[in-house]
Amino acid sequence: MKRFYHRVDIVQAAAGHEVALDGRLVKTSAKHALVVPNAALAAAIAAEWDAQQIEIRPAEMPLTRLASTAIDRVTPQRDAIVQQVADYAGTDLVCYHAAQPPRLVARQHEAWQPLVDWAVRRYDAPLEITAGVVPITQPAASLRAFAAAVAEQDNFALAALHLLTGACGSLVIALALIEGRLDAAEAYAASQLDESFQIENWGEDQEQAQRRQALADDISAAARFLTLLRGSTGG
Image 1: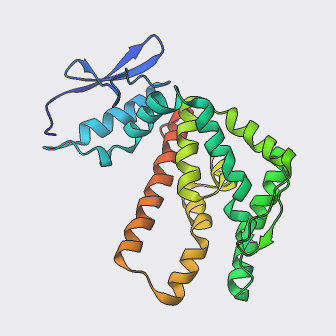
Image 2: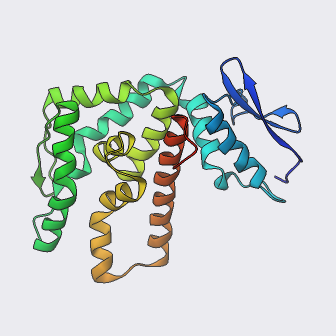
């Protein structure tokens, strides 16, 4: 789609803030009003629209996409999204360690064990750790605690958490980012630890590099979205 507007503005609304293109309010993909909770997030979304040149490229507007997801998908399907996200705790990446080689085992323990320990302190949710890929059953009380932590998020934060858990393959890593235990770069490194180790030994092809960059971009976008959601222009 070609850029059809000249001016981008922020408009205060009863429920938050909206973005206007030449006075016309931006809508979500499902044609709902794109109302976000605060001016900081609205300003960042407006900047995405203003940065578009001749063509409008949705892929270059991750904050707009996340806000639309919160409104179009999370709001009407909240219970299902909470369940999808909470289910990651049952097979969380940080619980499945390698048996060999020793360097990878050590690297996983160094990166992941502190996160498992943090989850115990933060949510009273101990997790079982195994070596290998055979599924293990996690304590029911821990799964309930993680589900409660997910359900505490508002719809906008839940949209970001949903993206993060999918990109990281780990609810523990995603919650650690939301809680400030990890930043975006650290979350990406923890979630990509195994693959990064293999790349060190065998190299990386172009398709793999593109996929990993897309995951890094998703994690970074979700982290920035959360920072803005809390009312800061940083991140």
